[in-house]
Image (cartoon, rainbow over all chains, first blue to last red; front, side, top):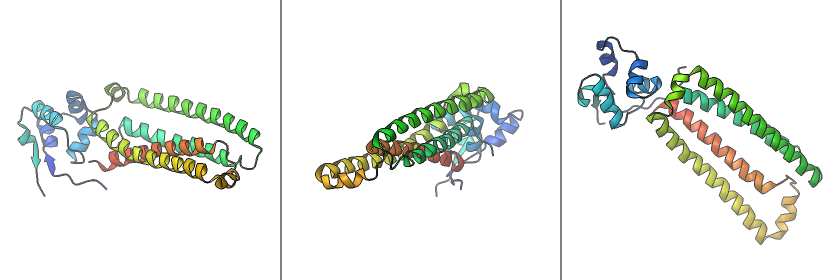
Length: 72
Length: 156
């Protein structure tokens, strides 16, 4: 039933290399719920630009390094 | 199933709305055939009863959810919640508008065809117009809850 979004991301991998940061910790840092982080990781939800920049900033990466666009 | 506070809260509202208002409309249909004054009195007491029940249910269950998810409750709606809320409100609005037009259509038909009035009166549902509007509102709310749950499950 889940939608197939054209945006993938490396959040899970980046969390792992950031001292195994949990979804809850990341969610609190960027001000969303854990379920929203989970939905982004599973590509079930595309974050707004603002949230995407916040997430990239947390990991000290550029937005393109965290999110990848795959046009169909 | 990993659900957010908002999704759980929507499930509570959906189940309580369907349960309580289903009971109400079933009760209203049971008044058909009673003398008008008796039916109106019964409808009013039924309405007061279900409003009390739904308010109590919402207060109890939403408070329990908020206490058990206090971190999320303090956060409020995040951007995903807001987007899904906007989308489901659009669906709900369409349902409500259909209900309003059905009500308006009924009023116009009755005004221009007084002969229908006698036939419609034979249905004997107390405050029929108000109940059609109330049903439209409840269906719009149910559509909103179902679409919200759908978006939370399916994603965007």
